[in-house]
Length: 311
Ligand SMILES: NC(=O)c1ccc[n+]([C@@H]2O[C@H](COP(=O)([O-])OP(=O)(O)OC[C@H]3O[C@@H](n4cnc5c(N)ncnc54)[C@H](OP(=O)(O)O)[C@@H]3O)[C@@H](O)[C@H]2O)c1
Image (cartoon, rainbow, N blue to C red; front, side):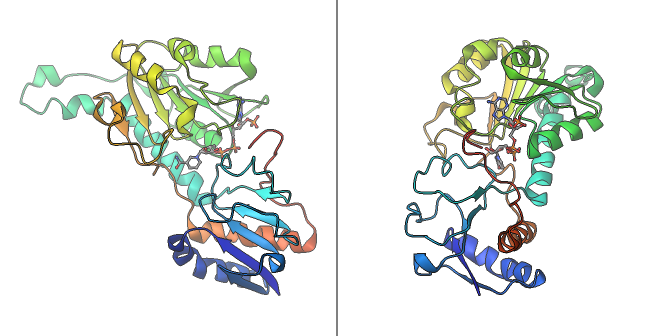
């Protein structure tokens, strides 16, 4: 019997219990799935970083920790975790992010807010013809599972898309840049900027006043990545100065975003409560079962986190 500890919130247990049980059965894995085991009996931990399990020392026979979230910044530095850590890559998570990013990009591209504000019978005041997508360069920072999928979806709509990543890439339909020298170039053309970077020591505060100033006047920012990728005060200053047109933010330095935070009341900021994309239990359970099957046969785990890079 393979003992799998489910270490996440009660609500997640309700959502995941049945699909995980089914996914293990579909792989012919004899799994005992529970929310409580003696630590020394646990073979795998299905994990959310907001679970009470924070000290992994007693889990002496654990073969891997399988994260339910794509982002691992809350667990990657945990010194008690010495076993392999896998992050979540899930069809539902990726497709949800593609829909969120394309929807919010099109809102700003098509000036939908302008038409909502001109419903008063004044035909001429309402008249604003948006450019074609092919005339609106977009930049996506981060070309991983989510960034690459979003960049390709935007390119398919006709936007000229530049992507930026740590290592050089060659992705059909995209202009791919990398490294510090590529960033200034990627920002300089970005009428819409999408942030899909993980939060690491290198990406924290990436979009500070200097980098925001490198964006063209009137640019829009979409941040479904992580809150600390942007310096809040610098973003507010760039919006107030008229340099940026709008920021649509799904993630924040403090979540929930405090009621007194200036983002809530700012007319050029859209606050979303970290809903851009959710791990979907049905498809995510299959990934977890696949990784348990791999662990049992000694095959390499999927989506292993590189601790040295922090993601
Ligand atoms: N809002 C939401 O609902 C939600 C949901 C899921 C995920 N997220 C966020 O989205 C992030 C991205 O997810 P993912 O699955 O696409 O991650 P991923 O596959 O690990 O991709 C990360 C990308 O960022 C690039 N990168 C990392 N550090 C960099 C640096 N210092 N300079 C330049 N590029 C750098 C990587 O470059 P290389 O390709 O060269 O490694 C890679 O292209 C997650 O970490 C999480 O924070 C948010």
